[in-house]
Amino acid sequence: KINLMPLSKYINNISALQFFQIFRFGVLLLISILFTKTHLAVREIGIYETILFLAGAVSFFWLSGLIQSLLPLYKNNKQTDKKNPAVFNAFLLISFFSLLASGIIYFARTPITSSIGNADIIPYIDLLCLYVLLSGPANLAEYIYLLTGQAKKLIYYGIISMTLQLLFVALPVVLGYPIIWGITGLVIISGLRVLWLLRLIFIHSGFSLNIPFIKEHLSLGYPLILSALLSGSAQYINDYIVSVYYDSETFAVFKYGAKQFPLIVLLASSFSNAMVPEFSGRPIPEVLSEIKRKSLKLMHLLFPATMVLLLTSHWLYPFVFNKMFQESASIFNILLLLVISYMVFPQTVLIGLKKTKQILFISLLEISLLISLSLILINFMGVRGVAAATVIAYCLERIFLILIIYKFIKIPPSAYIPLKKYLVYVVLLSAAFTASCFIHASVCS
Image (tube, rainbow, N blue to C red; front, top):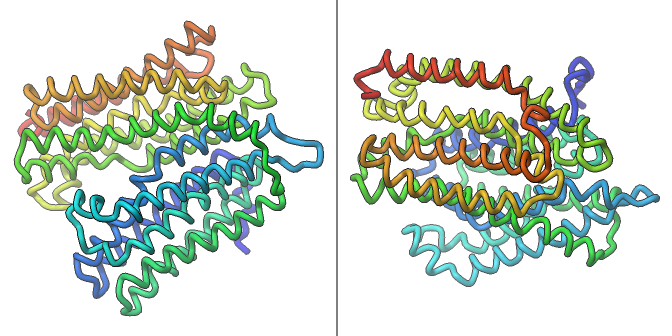
């Protein structure tokens, strides 16, 4: 067993969930890298990546919405025998949506494969459906550890489950077997995670149907589901706009630049999700103060890291990729400015207070702004205009959420945002971005 004692003082719900998400990302990246070093042809790697893409595309929005809406409900449903029906009933909901998504892929296989132009995945549709069916509920396991305050066990679970995924998926291919063995391994490890999840449900929840909870969960969750769907569509909208205005070469340059720094997204989203359950059973001012204090620690890490990337990306891009993607660094730098919006957490406050409909309304406004600004700025700044529109739309979204909290809930921004230090970081980040543009004027112009 891995000894975490020397790190105990750093282990809590937030750090454990952040570790889990980063470790999972690292394993998925390592699998992709290992595949490129094996006998697999590019076509076979494309099949694997397409399966992951389709599974994510049909499930990311409802899975995100249902899990986020479970977090503020959990403690309110705690019962005297230490069993909580919330987990089992959330499992039923997620399983229903997984079955629905799996069925859509199975019965609409022809139009789906035609729309993505990859008929190679047709022999793997059954495995894809099984993966979608199992992987959705499997994602609930780490949040049971979070909700029950078992931070160390969450870390152990992450290390063990994701190491097994590395072995089940990559090892058969490394040993010379075809890609179908890797995809089968993906299904098997998802099935094992579901079996472990059922064990956790038996311990912490039991198997009792609770219709009122399911109704409450859906009522709280549907705005978050629609909001996640709208937010997730932003990338596809940007890709479509660029593809209409420019040729495939420029589109490739844009796509390589539009790769957000994953550490920022993973740490920020994990922090937000870990803080939501704290609103149940604790005084609101106390939770807001904790968000303010702990988000500042996150700023101390991510703002300096982003500034370093801003000043070095124009040298790193040709080294990591090649000189053809030099201009991609400019797009990457613009999108690094998204850290400005990621480091404030009004959405966490609203979800914690169960005000999810406001988030949906602002998401609708955000996507409208994104489309409008992209179509305007692309005419003045080229593909960099689309990236700039994304940053502006995301920042405005956060501002609107902050204003809603201030106007309707009477909570000032200073209650949960370390405003002075945050603004100092924003000024320093802007200076680093400007310096980068001056240093690499030939590319940024």
